[in-house]
Image (cartoon, rainbow, N blue to C red):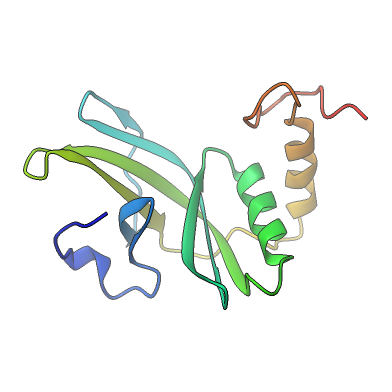
Length: 148
């Protein structure tokens, strides 16, 4: 994706663009969720990771549980991923009339990473409980879990 130079995409080590985002911005506050025909903002969590085998990569999740699990599992692949962080974030999709296409922006909240805290195992347990082999998405509050 190629967009004109953005002043907000400079000055932060993890800014810029990648294959699935036109812009990646570090922000002090996140916009509220929004849904109109030409503008959608979803609130959630972003996992940033990088390593010797991959450039900086950001992946957005609606819930913190799968974000924490994704980050931790990726870090276990030590040869490819040497660092990661989980942050509160907003994913924005806005139609740009000048470019005549949708522009994808990830807004990452400036702050401490939410991963590797003492209560992380509790979130992992919620993630397992919210997994169902019949669905591809995390289902918070789901108690069926995975059947052996």
